[in-house]
Image (cartoon, rainbow, N blue to C red; front, top):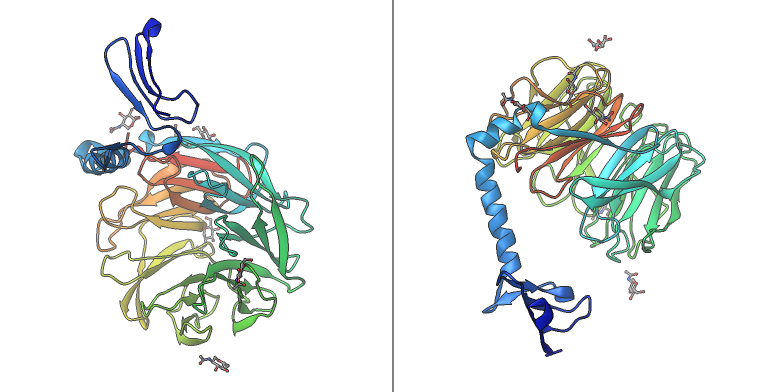
Length: 430
Ligand SMILES: *[C@@H]1O[C@H](CO)[C@@H](O)[C@H](O)[C@H]1NC(C)=O
Ligand SMILES: *[C@@H]1O[C@H](CO)[C@@H](O)[C@H](O)[C@H]1NC(C)=O
Ligand SMILES: *[C@@H]1O[C@H](CO)[C@@H](O)[C@H](O)[C@H]1NC(C)=O
Ligand SMILES: *[C@@H]1O[C@H](CO)[C@@H](O)[C@H](O)[C@H]1NC(C)=O
Ligand SMILES: *[C@@H]1O[C@H](CO)[C@@H](O)[C@H](O)[C@H]1NC(C)=O
Ligand SMILES: *[C@@H]1O[C@H](CO)[C@@H](O)[C@H](O)[C@H]1NC(C)=O
């Protein structure tokens, strides 16, 4: 270090050393000064972290730019979205998540493939490019259904948990790291409990470790499994409901804002309940509204911007997407149907796609093979949908997230047949 060299022949003034990871300051022929931070990663000028400052500035400028009429027109023009597909040869995606599995700072796509009997991931290469499928678990005895991603042992590496309805299993896959190939080791939580289906992760007993909540369609149980620490997930179910036999989906989230997670699972009867948690693992049931039958998708967010979480559901059987405004703390919900008719809505996600401060709904229509965007005009008023993807055969899952790292929210659709993963990149931030 401290090496100051004059590279006369190249006309470069070099301050620093020559190792690939070393910082570098040089002047080029045009007289420009180049500063590279090398492995240090941070460039301080007069004690100010200029890279972080530029990043913040870029985000602010981008947010301002996103509010211009031009940007608004662009984002509402479905032809301005960039559509592509990811997936290689993978068949029949059933569920997907978006998390940084390999710790490179870019989030990756994790997918369960029912017919391939595999759990796979697609490594993000940045800018909306993905490489895969890479195996997390292959040659499973039965097709996996649903998954969640969470760091169960707090080793900094996200792990994966998945259900198999036919196999009656609930298994988590410990992320063992590895470069470039990640390896995962399976740990069974449950075997042979028929109909293991929906799975979510939350710290149910508030001991600092993430627990697993699972809905079993066969036995009808909703049960949580305690993480005793370091990923020691108990095989003893804490059954909190016996009414999951007609349900497909559950939300595990603090609905009434008392600081404890609650559980909601719409079923095919007039007696859908919310289970309000007390933070110790015990729950009290309260009635929820009657809901349409055949709800496969559920999302929770503050849709009308009143400070309370609301609930949106997509009913495949009734061709209805409905959201329920939480009117008072947990015990009164006002239903609102979304306009227009979508055939077979089976996937649902919430996010502010146009950065206008209102939470939008993205819905995947299984029968119509398309994914649409319901723009929230504010306070939960929606206009007719804008089509984002029109070739997602039998869509089972949609994700709304920043898939290309440019600061706006994109849409990923996982399909049960045909091309497997469709990606629509948001043109809000050009
Ligand atoms: C919509 O976007 C497409 C593709 O960028 C463009 O050609 C077209 O002019 C846009 N339409 C409108 C109404 O802005
Ligand atoms: C987790 O593992 C670490 C390291 O092996 C150990 O120090 C710690 O006590 C463990 N914590 C629990 C809750 O088991
Ligand atoms: C939770 O419920 C169980 C079984 O009813 C009971 O034994 C336990 O005391 C309860 N826990 C708390 C903290 O209330
Ligand atoms: C939903 O739409 C499908 C496809 O058009 C139709 O077959 C089905 O009967 C509809 N369901 C209801 C409840 O209208
Ligand atoms: C489907 O979307 C593409 C753009 O992604 C568009 O070019 C095409 O016209 C659309 N097809 C139909 C039938 O709407
Ligand atoms: C959908 O069509 C677009 C072209 O309009 C194509 O690039 C993409 O691969 C297709 N996606 C799927 C999921 O089939």
